[in-house]
Image (cartoon, rainbow, N blue to C red; front, side, top):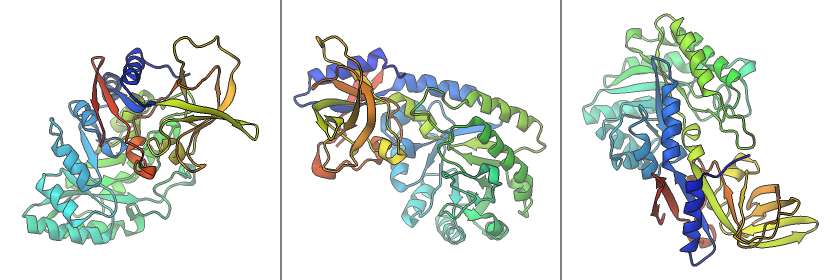
Length: 405
């Protein structure tokens, strides 16, 4: 059962009191974000770093909150570089992802990117040319698409199968040789991101063990293996949207600490999670516009929808819902299974199916928690030209709002 923090509930009620139209808005609890990330960072063993993948949520207020806490940021576009330039606390950043533009790479070089993750053999040659033009010897990681054992396969796999991500392990020796021979590239390590949205800590332990087992073999491919210091193990730590048992981060870190201590010449490990960092601080609040029954199914039509909060459709799940009734509501009634939908002219505009809610009425507020990652920022906000939702950022129980134009 999800609970709504008092400060978030108060901010929603205050926003409704000042809104001429029914409500649809996002609220981010920056104090909760700071507490969560502080605990995440405190659990890391020696020799392990954490960079936040800003693709999960790159709102300036979140970046400003996270910058003093994390070791750095991971970006995947020129636009995300611009977001970091505006951040009040400068931190190291790495650039990864397929399809990098020359203009993006030039911007990263100009901004002193710590490392660039190479995704293809062609990208190695292209970056060598750009780094030479910039007069900069650039540290790089080669992203590996390794051969995974069957026990680590998954429908959410981003490696070990045919993907646009990384360089197949069969081509790794060739890639390493190309970097070793490049005058303006310096191989610093490897990047492997195999599984996405991982909820089982046991499987992630096995995955990290597999990486560390392979590390000496990968490292030995270089003519200068002593220069390889880092192994980026990506993100992929999942969030349990439908249950209450979140990923056991402390257990993973304890396991990793023991594993690194027993490994000779262990690399510096780097995580780059996004969802696991920012998901918990966000809430999407929507007001009920209509209640209706069709072919035996009950629907709540709400302000907003998947054009503002695409996560449930993208994940393929029915999102949890917290009901905030209006003051003076009648006594609770037995729950009824409601399907929560938005305002869009498509049957795919569904946020939650068969959600048990009692005594829900028009004008009530429904709050969708765990909305701080891959929610608004991946949504098709211009569909039907509805106005974009306000975003409130709470800090010290004080809300700062931006119109999100």
